[in-house]
Length: 58
Image (cartoon, rainbow, N blue to C red; front, side, top):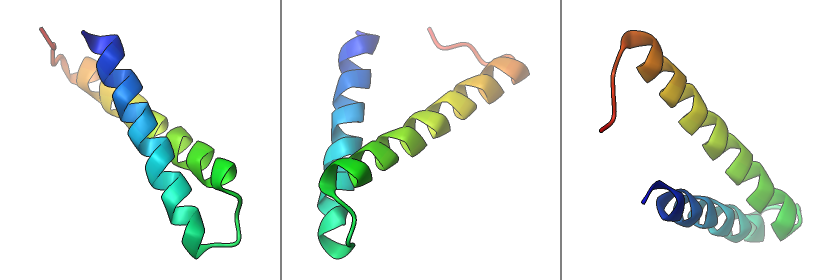
């Protein structure tokens, strides 16, 4: 059940980034990829911190 959630979250990040490109001169694909990159980095850092302090997700 984790993979569908990751896919939906990633798709949401790309769509949000692409929509934000309407307010900037950047292309939609660049803004979407940038948003996905920052979202993935935030999720990864959060996971690492949780692992470091011993939080387990069941």
